[in-house]
Image 1 (cartoon, rainbow, N blue to C red):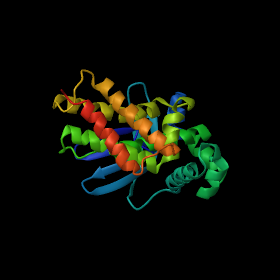
Image 2 (cartoon, rainbow, N blue to C red):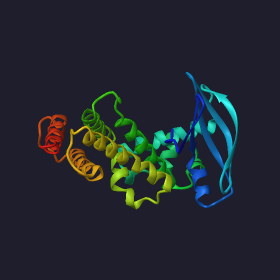
Image 3 (cartoon, rainbow, N blue to C red):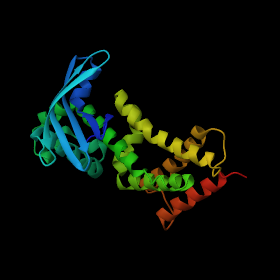
Image 4 (cartoon, one colour):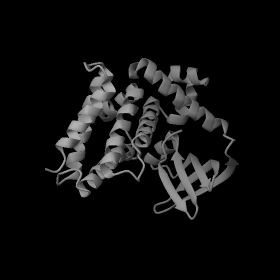
Length: 263
């Protein structure tokens, strides 16, 4: 499932709005109406998918009309989209970006190649969907319990970052090594920036609690991210000489944070 592009809270209900790539493509071209809008409605412990939506774009507002369906029911269109994303992720990890073709993705998902184009517009649209899926997954991986201390939350989030990268090496490569080569939408770029924003927030909290020194949380966060990215990139590439790679990363992280502690 693609990452949420908008979150709206109304009383006790929460609406998570997900635009398909087809819809986002139309929005970028300023077409007045976009279809294929998916909503997930959470009320208490019940979950409902809202399908068959249309979004009319105005200058200051939008109007959504929808048909509500139960949790266990998914339209064939949504099921196919999910299958295509899953197929693309599997092929990406098996064959890398050069081996990812529309034909192979469609074949693995059990649909015609036109099914990819009708949902994502192009191969670039499919890559953007994978990019957004990756950053939504990374954001989930670095989430930590709010009850922990700021420095513990920072440390735990960094460990989650490594686990995500090691478990999804080709997706990680797409997200960070191919970012500038992709024709990304503003929504995709914003989603990518949120992960770094979370790191800045964790660093700022640790600085506020006097667990880290420094005057710029953004600058310190950049240093932490540079160290993490370098370490996991070397590990993914197989350029690593430590016996226990996880322990080596932990030792690197400890040394980094100790060096950033107030003196």
